[in-house]
Amino acid sequence: MSDASGDDPFPVPPGDSASRAAAERISALSRLWSEAEPRRDRFGRSSESRRSDCRRSTARDEVDERREQ
Image 1: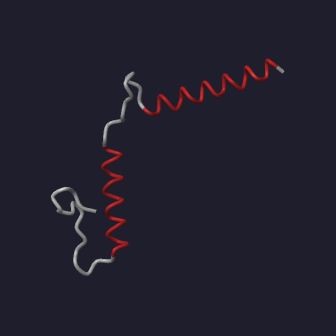
Image 2: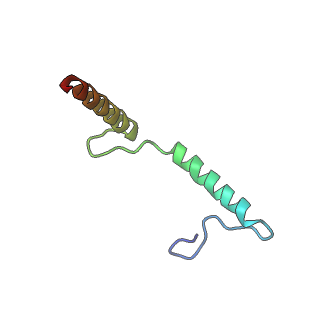
Image 3: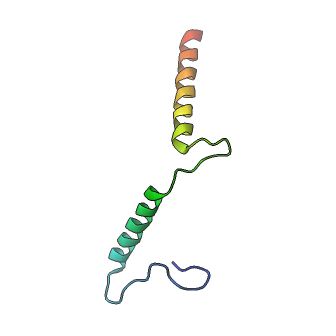
């Protein structure tokens, strides 16, 4: 994988296996992702907040369906 300048940000060292290099890239990207601050939508809610809102609305829909029956 290379950027616009053609320099690979994660070069594969000579003699290293491609699968090990890929595993190191994944590990580095996972670490960066976990260290990044949580993303927020335009309303300032984090993705976890949106997931819990979705779970709540699904639970509410199930309760409403049971009441209608």
